[in-house]
Length: 422
Image (spheres, rainbow, N blue to C red):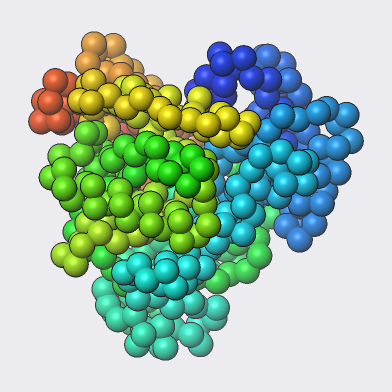
């Protein structure tokens, strides 16, 4: 699955490395047109619904293409189980299907960690509204409600009491009931893919403390690389910005990396690339979730800038069965601050050039809007806020990079027609 257009730099890097790429995705996906640009060799069209027959249909389509594949890879979270299945069926190196499936299911991830003796938050499965009271009693508050197979913070909410739990659960089910497409699905149709199998949700104990991403590489059971990224405080269960290297004590970062390795082992992973979300709480390090793929957004670029490690290159080597031992810089090569430009209120985008004014600043490493004119965007009062764009800046220290980013963002005027005066 080709995922959203923001993944394009990863495909471009793969081409630079001499890899010939074939995309398997649903009808009308953007990667289909990119074949004409030479980014991909060809496009294999397979409707991603119904999920119950997707694996077999995808395998038949890959075999019918007449091509011989050296590997199967993905940069997209929702494609993990299909990628593992195809690799196994085509006889090439791949992740253990059981491990990938467990990582895609937040309940099974928790169960595996608990079984391995890893300290974990309280959690409960919610299949219907009849489960809400028992889940509230079992988990307590504050808590986080989210889909069992969630991605990109979709339908993820902090709830502080049972009334808020019932309100958010009812809101989520109302928003998806009768509104999902039955066919013609491709990998940008996230709602359809998240809820493809059921409407199960999980209620988890809210974890206090600071949040981090650990971008890491495994090779033959050994954690051969780990880059820790600090996430700015999140009010709405979504990322708003990052700082790298993480401004956090080295010993506690080491504990986060150790926890990451333990969790990956508990699920049965031995090789590959991972984006693991963790928190350092008042009780020590705790897992949020495991993503069995490279981090999205600017994570690939950040790891290469700060630590000199090309995660795309290393990951694709693991897909070909090649051993990896990336050389991580002893000291940060640069310090970077990033903003995801969260939407402050709901409205309609009037123009998409609102970041152009700061894009020419020499300290800006990357700057791009992620919305289009006429697009409806959501603010915190109506749900999980949308991301409006990405801005990445450099500095000699984290403090300097953060100050630069703050100064630049003050120059940005959001061209949004708000739903009401804000």
